[in-house]
Image 1 (tube, rainbow, N blue to C red):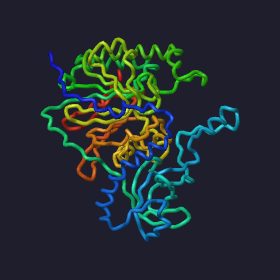
Image 2: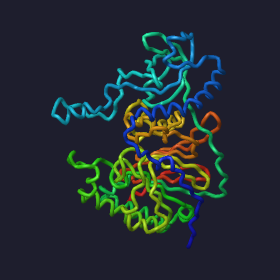
Image 3: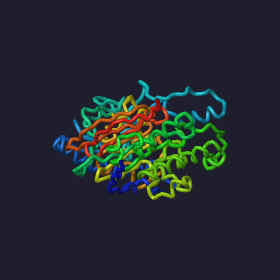
Image 4: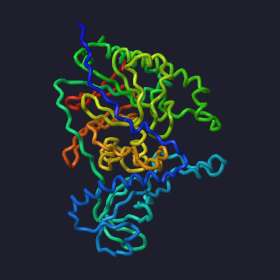
Length: 430
C-alpha cells in the first residue's frame, strides 16, 4: 500500500526570539522596566474590568504621601530567598571555603515577597500565596499601606491570557510529532528505539493512516546531551565542543538520525540547555554546519528556543524546558502543566529571566512576553508525558503539553491539529 503524506501550511513566527541585542554593556534592570512598561496598559484594562475603577491607582513611592484607605498598585514581584544560588557562594566553593549544600529546590519558610516599580520596593503581606509565585511576575495588587514599608494585599490581578485568533476548521486530522531529550551523547542503549521510530515513520510497522497524516516533527532540545559536560572550569565555552571528541561524535550521530527523518518529513530542531548553542535565552538556532548531511534537505529546519510557529493555522508556542524547570525550582509548584498555565496567566514565557534564568540583556523590550495567545503551549524535557486543555477568561482554549525525555521514557507525543487531542507513543523495543 502506497500512501501520500499530508502537508500543511507552515510559518515560522519566532522573529522576536532571533533578534538579539548587540550592546552587552546594559544593566539587566532595563528588561524589568521594559516588562513593566508593556504590562501597565494590560493591567489597567484588567483593573477597570474587575474593580470598576472603584479604587485609585497609586505609585509605590506615593503610598505614604497619599495615605489611601485602599488603593491599587502595579509593579513586578521580587522573591527574596536565602537558598537562592549566588555568585558569592560559588566563589566560596572555588576558593575551598565552607562548601554550600547542593540543592535542587530553593524555597524556604523564610522567603519574603516584595513588589517593586521604577523607584520603590514594598514588602508584600496578606491575602496572596507567595509559595506559588516567583520573581519577575508583573501584576496589580489591591490593598493598603500598613506602614514600615509593608503593603497588605486584599486581592490581586495578573495580566491574563492575551487575545487568541480563532482556531481554523480543519477537515481531517493532521498530526505533529514532538520529541525531546534524545541525548545522543548517551544514546547507545536507545539505538533500537530510534530505529523503531524511523520504521514507524516509514509506515513499515503499519498504522499507515496516522503516519501518512503526520506533517511535521518538532524536536524540543537536549538532542546532543541532557546533562552538563564534566570538564575543567578553565576551558572556555567556545572550546568545549572542539576539545570533546564524545560530543563531536554525538553531533555526528544526531546528524545521521536527522538525515533519516528529513528524508521522510519536515523536521524542526530546537536547541536545549546542553546543546551546542548559546546558553542564555533566547537560544539561537543551531548552526547548519553542524548537520552537513541533514542540511542537504530542505525539510531540515534549525529554529530558536523559545519557538513560535503556525501549522495549518494553529499557533504553537514552546520551549525546551528551561523556564518551566526554573519556576519549579523557585516555587512550590510541582506540576509542569500548572507552571505553563500560570505562564499564560502571567502572560510571560520565562518570568524568572534574568534573575535565575540566563537571558540576553534586553534594553527596550522583553521578547518573552506572550503577544498572542497560542493554541498549543509545550515544554520539553519533562519527567513524563502529560497534557490537558486550559481556558482563559475570554474563552481562550490552549492545549498544554509536557514532553517526556525520550532517552528515559522512550516516548514521543503525537498531536492532532484538528482536535488538539494528544497521546504518547512508546517506542520501547520488546
